[in-house]
Image (cartoon, rainbow over all chains, first blue to last red; front, side, top):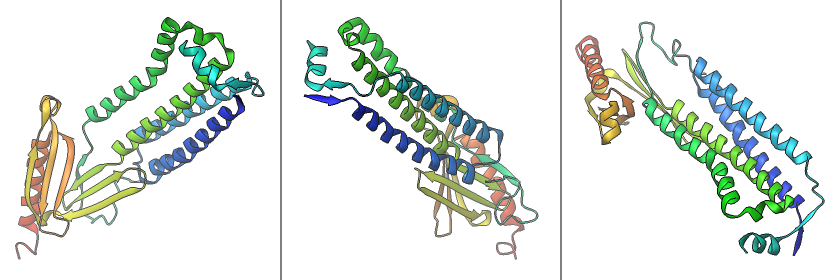
Length: 82
Length: 182
């Protein structure tokens, strides 16, 4: 059974949207309820920088893949195991 | 944002005496745990190369595995920051007039309660476990006469000294308070 691999890209996109929504809540909490300290701003900046790094790396990788290909799910599993 | 020099409803002669969070070991333990989780894909990659090298014969399969790793690392990072926020936003503030208990429970629950020092009836501390005893952290329980009966400062550093300091502040406040000493 062949399925287009773009489905995995869609699933990844949904996960990224979930990540962004939860990040929004966390950043709101840090800014709304956190203290006005260096530690708070430093950790918040670190979180943003690492998140942006991970997302841009993923986007760069996604651009290198031909997402119009298909994959056979049955052979995918069996060829790995056997 | 919470400014420690400008507490909500702060009295003119009110001063912050103690600002407490959980012991730093608690968050360092989380950091270690998340570093292990973040490193798991590397271990999986190594084990696949060693035991199942045919996995890497198919470019599509490798691409999907890399995409999975990106999603995994993103969520490890998210849950790590969430753990930090949970640690950082739990604060116990003791002033010379009152005790303020700020607790963040998950993303959507936040509880703030306060109690006047002269209402405190009993202060006790406890340390449990190897790390608690070795690193000197534990719980401080404060029993009050109000509806919010008991405050517990969880896993704070030097609990015995904290309990003693609060007892001193309570005695001092009761001595000077017009309701207790008219």
